[in-house]
Length: 127
Image 1 (tube, rainbow, N blue to C red):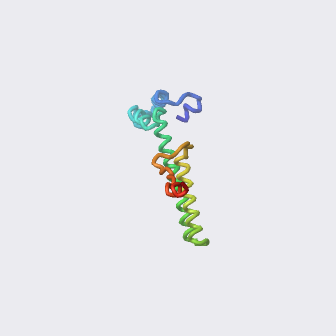
Image 2: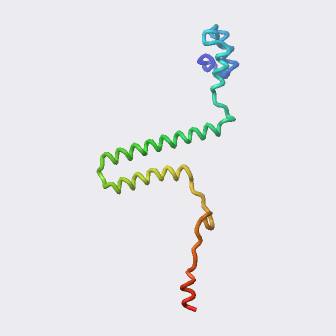
Image 3: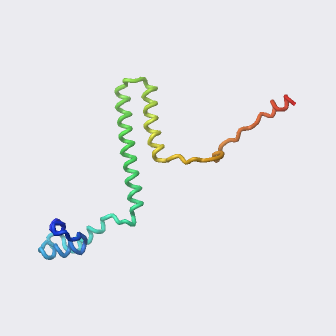
């Protein structure tokens, strides 16, 4: 691959097999079947959405682990009152929730929300 890159040639399955065949190294690296199998492990653009989802999930988990470690360190240090540390921890965790599930602007009542009721007894008393 280095030789192909140094010459400015494209690096793909065909050119790599050809270069390894010319240099006599194809069988030494595992043969054509092994080179072809390597390509099977390369991510394809058709799966980009799936890969992006995995990357986003892993980033979220790393950020959550980082926040959890900060919460542990702060709690063990106990330099503030427990309520303050709890508020800070809650803020850190809810910040992750907000980044994960952005809120959408909804107009009108929320599904399942209880409608306010008018107190009829006070209306009757005035009549």
